[in-house]
Image 1 (tube, rainbow, N blue to C red):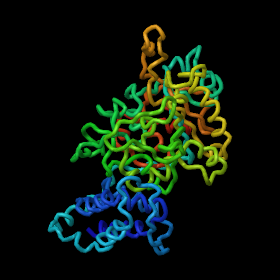
Image 2 (cartoon, rainbow, N blue to C red; image 1 turned 90 degrees about the horizontal axis):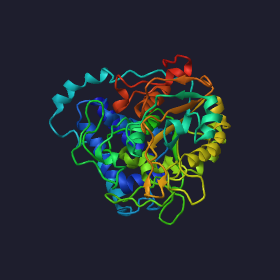
Image 3 (cartoon, one colour; image 1 turned 135 degrees about the vertical axis):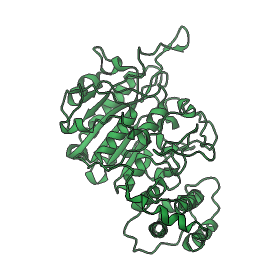
Length: 456
């Protein structure tokens, strides 16, 4: 119980140190969730579970050291649109949080003492971090393996210019043809469910009472994961590293670039043709990122990428790059006469990838991953108005790794999938594996980058 109390008190200090937009977000939209995290951690039988990890992640994000006094909160409400009850909640929130005495009042003190030895056994041993310190994931749609890497590719920049520089994962496959099941799996290890398989037609919470199993996998069907469900972004912050998601075309309702744009709760998204879509942004589906302000700080417009690439110090350790619906390579999303489908995705890569490869961070210790996150339904047949038949195996898409630590022109034929992308990223940074990324059958391509390729 002592360790939990200490964690609780450190959480209070960290929260007192929050400033600016992060403070406003926490007060306006996260107080209930944050209190829930602390309450759940305080009543948990072990402080080594995901709730304690989430508190640790939040603490790591705010260790600046904590000696500076917390500034008086200002009643700004530039974010937190909706129910932002002025400064009143800020005042009332500090009262219960700053007096932890009532919390231990429930009687299960003996049980807490019995459970204390359990944390000494870690859930999964941490892997030693490797030489790669900057990972760039560019996520686009696939028109099929042959269209990307075949003899007559529809993506010539990817297949003929970039492929000779990297390692081709020739047996990388999707979990589903839709976008969200793959991208959510790649950043959290959570499996597809009926809502994500439909690309979350409404921005829906998991049912009340949904629980995770021992691996952290949440049962049921929903879109917005409970606050204790961690993502790779949480892990990155917990390791005192930095992440950014760069979303092309992400704007607010007035058309101005904005951060962490998401539909209203329980509402259906109405995306602009060729523009930003919530289904291409997996980070907006985690309360762990929404409620503690990380999404609003790190899920940013694509226009920020070029600026961040200028110096190693401004380049995040993990960058997730998602083009808009047109440039992602989804047929029917581009203006008439412009490249469409696979050609549009290839044109996007030809513009963005050289900037990444020329960046100081990539040159120093970087890895670029060209990953496909969905199957493109194919061009529209003008005779029928329906998409053309998909590729022979729409789930087989391939992927490409480009790094000075890899073997240019090599092929790795091991069976990989989005869980492998997460597991490999975690291995590269020496982090434990989340959700289904920790399954024994999930292979990591990280060894291929240090000359220990297990491919055929």
